[in-house]
Image 1 (cartoon, one colour):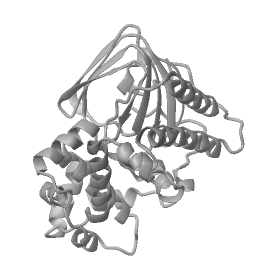
Image 2: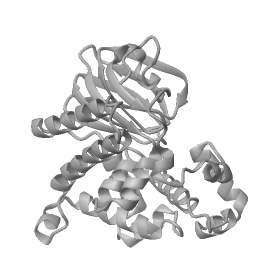
Image 3: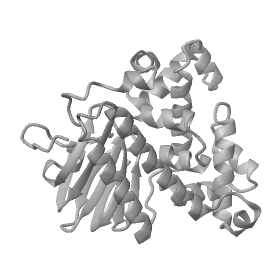
Length: 320
């Protein structure tokens, strides 16, 4: 674990002076602890290159994401997908948090090959910004998980260091999934009927999205399936995820496109057609708008296996 701030800067998105301890493997995993007040304003809103999970222990974090201001207080967690556009971050003087970050390919690998996780959990991780309040017991569990990950990232002499760190990150996700599973129910009749009507609708909306996202992109389609107005569906989604329903639909389409681009047997034209774009050019413009690269460039940069993700443990730079 590199702790020399003169030779290795922590993720710049958090502010160099605030990260008190951290560990990382470049282009793989990052974990650290953030303390103290700061105010960071970017000249141009930026997207984090890594998916971030921030566990706020104390204090307040105010941030402007996708043009809107959010406040997260102690005993809560924040999920920050790579489609988030961050313009400003401000910490209170008593701010204290733990953060874990990973390349999106690792998350995709976990959800694709290492289920079961609740479908809602995968959806929320990939497509929403969370701000749930946590109990002391949950805080203690997540604090332990990220602390273990930080220590694992310092185990440079461990022969299976990458596997060790991957396992600790997987444990963190498993505990987070358990938290959501307990909060929103397991889907059994007794628990399901106890859920708020809006939670039931959100669950059904997620299922419909996963089943129909390749062909249906309009809010009206999903609202009609749920027998509610599209205005009400928009309100529910905004309340549960803090982002507009159109953003949810677009981000899920990008996620599906990314998965299809992993299949070497599918041409980009075939993928465009499968996702109901009028032509390959329209698909390319859409994908570039949401990822910053063309489908061809994304495909050429793909790492085909988890092993090819893993850089040598020596050297590298921090994500940021």
